[in-house]
Amino acid sequence: MTEKCRRLAGKIAIVTGAGTTQARDNFGTGQAIALLFARQGAKVLVADLDADRAELTRQTILAEGGEAAVVRANVAEEAGCRAMVEACVKEYGGVHVLVNNAGAGASGTVTDIGAADFDLAVDVNIKGAAMAAKYAIPVMAEAGGGSIINITSIDGMRTGGIRNVPYSVAKAGLSHLSTLMACHHGHQNIRSNCIAPGHIYGSYVHNFLTPDIRERRRRAAPLGTEGNAWDVAWAAVFLASDEARWISGIVLPVDGGLATATPLAMFDAIEGGDNGARGEVG
Ligand SMILES: NC(=O)c1ccc[n+]([C@@H]2O[C@H](COP(=O)([O-])OP(=O)(O)OC[C@H]3O[C@@H](n4cnc5c(N)ncnc54)[C@H](O)[C@@H]3O)[C@@H](O)[C@H]2O)c1
Image (cartoon, rainbow, N blue to C red; front, side, top):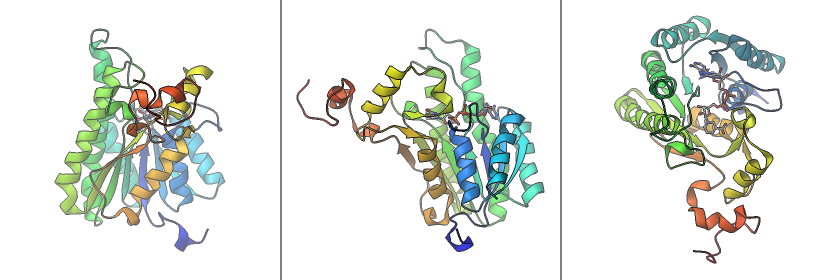
């Protein structure tokens, strides 16, 4: 690809949680975002709690001829966020794109959960994104602007298939944080948007999905196909690019159309019939 064709040429990006928990053919969203950003010409700071995972992503980028550095960072701590941004400035001279991808959560209804579960979900998903942005925004503003991309979830919009109050509430909070940042920092030419992945198959769910549930998740989306980390990563490339220069404050579902459907609209499809609402049930 020529330099002119690369959508992110000249950009410097931080991607949090950009390691992966799984083998090479089962990418995490952060890892796929880091790889695609590098393929599109960005210099990428791969940030992760687990330095070995981050290094795996960096090595993959380097093997493809891309440019990447690694920092071990716990985004749940303000000092970790500050050090991460400082490492990016030191290594590459600035920050144009921040992807708040690191996430954590726990299962349970409100009567099941422990306070520690709640703290972890809030600390990683909301506080982590806020603290990373706190240190990245002044650096972005100094360079004339930037793009913040927050990875939320369809679970932050409606009740998902798993009872996971801490996770869902934290993703909803992250979405509102994104809205506030879009409004408060728009005058500095800083855009803030969310990507809400749907039932994608990747490293995050690999360990607990049975084949049957995986198949039902596929059928539940009107497109009837399974999404993966690359679908999320291409959306991130767009939101990071200058082509998205007038887009701020949105939540972009990457979900195969899931958000268009009520449960009964997909009833037949989930049971193994045709996709799409036929109005024969309910
Ligand atoms: N995969 C899905 O089905 C799905 C759906 C909706 C939303 N998401 C969101 O996508 C994001 C990433 O998921 P993934 O598929 O890449 O998961 P993953 O488990 O492959 O990767 C997450 C990475 O985040 C790192 N991490 C965890 N806590 C951290 C912290 N405190 N500081 C820094 N790094 C930390 C982990 O070490 C891991 O490498 C999460 O925000 C998740 O909520 C995923």
